[in-house]
Length: 487
Image (tube, rainbow, N blue to C red; front, side):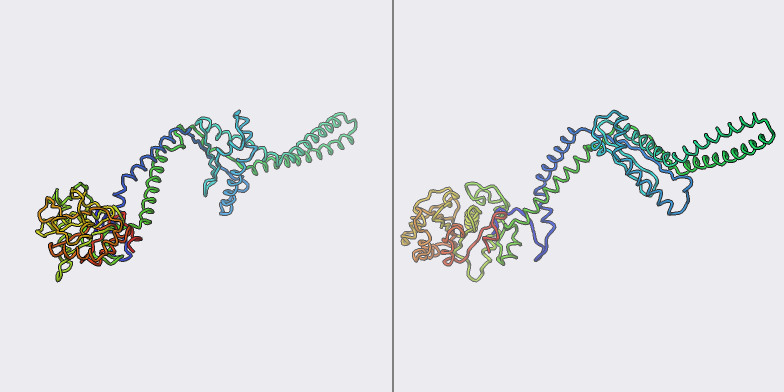
């Protein structure tokens, strides 16, 4: 018996999981997922809106190899790409960063500025991309362009220093040779003899040849310097971009909203996996091997049985279906006495027993509805009658006529015997021989006797009374009754 049944099938077969269960979970907890998603997205939107926007500006450099090393083979291409990697590392050196700070008059630590700069070689190209992030879009562009200028200046300085010594040496030798030629020509002009003039002429020719040789060496050194130089060209000038790259309010809102939904869903699935409560009749039958008489859907509970005040409602029809199943439970020997109990308190046993008593009475059966909960009786409240001269008195005085203990309800054929005074020893009374006499007397004057007993796990009363009746109905509330208490 299921009371307040809310969920659908969980299991397709032994060990199989029905996707319908998870679809139900999504539908059942959709409101929570939606609320968490909206709150998460709203918080992300608010926080992102309060953050200082960061702008990005970038430029690219083209690294061209020296003419003397230009070839078209694969090794040359690899060497060029390796050079772009080397130059990318050199751009992030402290000397470059400090010079940028100096030229732009920035008040910032070099390490802090370095964290805002990203220099990356473009894969499979001779390009280097320089990206700068700053809270000021104009400053981001200035820093990117200044890095290029400073780096090119430093590269030219390094390259020119490679041949500067040899060039300076040759240049000084050329200067000295020019002086000597001038001196020889001066002496030649003042020569007094032909022999002296011829000697000076020969000497002048030697100096001219030596000068020509030095001049050729100087030009070769200068040309070698030019050919060995690697040209770095700025492909595009960095321009201010007034669209911030951080925070991306839209992306942050969407991602955090989705994260909130996913986390909520994981929590729901985790709690569902850890949930040991009975959820469906199929689950109960397969795990415990007991039959299910019927399912009563969740409905509002009033002071009177729903089958009495709303006999045409779907819930009342469910009780009539259970009535039919009980009648077919034992065809050869119809059930004359039924015990209704539940594993734990507040699982709906009194609601079930009262409605069953009503629908059996509607079917023309002479029904006695007995409150066998001698500890916390509730039948008199459910049937809206006083609790007097009840079962506790009847057990002690089984010869008492039923009419003196019975309270007529507004339903024809339905007789109610309440608990009466609460005794100090309920279990002993229910298991006594006098109780057996009471049951036999009730059976002799009725078609069906329904006992509303206390929860079976709370006290031993139902276990004591169960052997004396024809059948026991166990009321289970899905989502509350656990398999731990049933197994």
